[in-house]
Image 1 (tube, protein in one colour):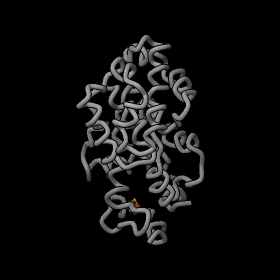
Image 2 (image 1 turned 45 degrees about the horizontal axis):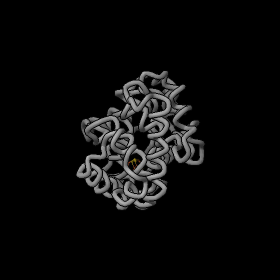
Image 3 (image 1 turned 90 degrees about the vertical axis):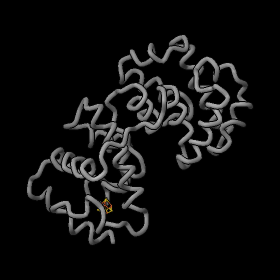
Image 4 (image 1 turned 180 degrees about the vertical axis):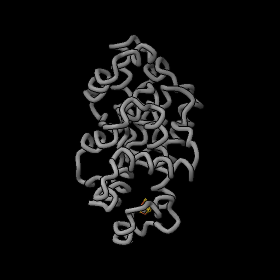
Amino acid sequence: MSDRKAQGVSETAIVLEIYDRLYAAFGPQNWWPADSPFEVIVGAVLTQNTAWTNVEKAIARLRENELLDTEAMMQVPEERLAELIRSSGYYRLKAQRLKAVLRFIFQSYNGRLDQMFKTEGSVLRQKLLSIKGLGPETVDSILLYAGAFPFFVVDAYTRRIFSRHEMINEKQSYHEIQNYFMTGLSNKTRLFNEYHALIVRTAKSYCHKILPDCVSCPLGTLPGFEKQIRETK
Ligand code: SF4
């Protein structure tokens, strides 16, 4: 148990303090980097198991070919779609996944994202999770960043940072970790939006997998965590 927890500081207070520190250090991150909700959905599928720079190249090719549109992407042959998104890796699989998402949007909502996002959040979440190849991180990214639903996105960076601070166990399930953040911070879409982006920024800037830079990191002076951070080094 961290010193702070032992002192009776609530989990919510710690989670909010971390947010405040990261926001003060990095400012607004303006996520998700996309021009439309459909582009967010495409990016959320393409970013699976690859770096965002590879996704950007694929999105640029889709834009050049005027395919960042549900109707246009639904019409394009899957093989052609795969070719255009090649830079994102696992491109045949990702083309299949994009087509599966599109079939769902057309079969259930007549191709209308505005209709899809009128569905109650937890109902839509279950429906999206039933699409082959969409796991909770992808689905929650879509719900939060394309649909403005209050679902906290958990990724490898979240596990790394918060387990290093002994607030979660890295091996906990996705939903256990998500519940940790959402308990006490319910229905805070704006906060969840910014918080996930700030976590990604922190991990990329300081909380590297090997040799985290705790001295420079905005969380390096978080009171009560000095012991854990020393052990991380
Ligand atoms: S770099 Fe150090 S202080 Fe910053 S989040 Fe990672 S473990 Fe915490």
